[in-house]
Image 1: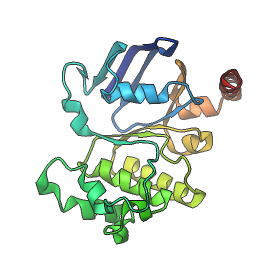
Image 2: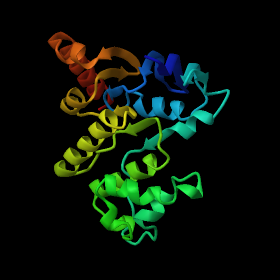
Image 3: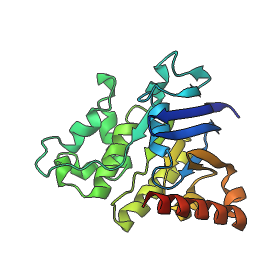
Image 4: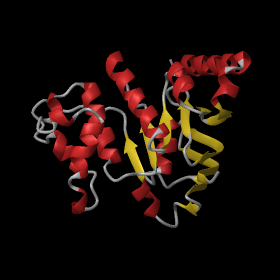
Length: 240
């Protein structure tokens, strides 16, 4: 199976800290990769580098076999869902407006309604984005990410601050996108149970790469899970 993402010896240094230290892993077409790690582990730095927002790194990042510093064409094949943004209730953009921001071609206009129906949010298409619940807003941002039929979906802790019912619906949508539409998903999360249920591969990140491999290999190994949990707790205590 083709490697569509290749991270090779990725290191990111800031003046007072090394955010990522010699991180290497690959993602194959159709994978569902769960990236786990404590706050400050470097997950957002990793995504910023992969999306071309941070270019000051050492090492190599390739999408579809091409170094991203040589071409930005790969971005057309990526949908990105950030951590939940907060909108004022009177923010003037409607659901339709927000999803339309993701369009690259006017000819795709009728794709908006199709995606909103797929994500069970079409009845709110004329409502202001600020009037929706956190879970509804995240579905809108998934719709915005999917409206151009991306090959890869990248999600940065997308269920922060969302109620459990919305989280369950969100996870079922991700499962369907991966299993039925064959979209490759790279998803950072603190929810180990959800990663265990959804992802077929897992990467444990704490500035360095603690583990990368099949989910079963990690979650069925009590010693690995214990080592990871202890490392995460030590990082949390160090920061506080």
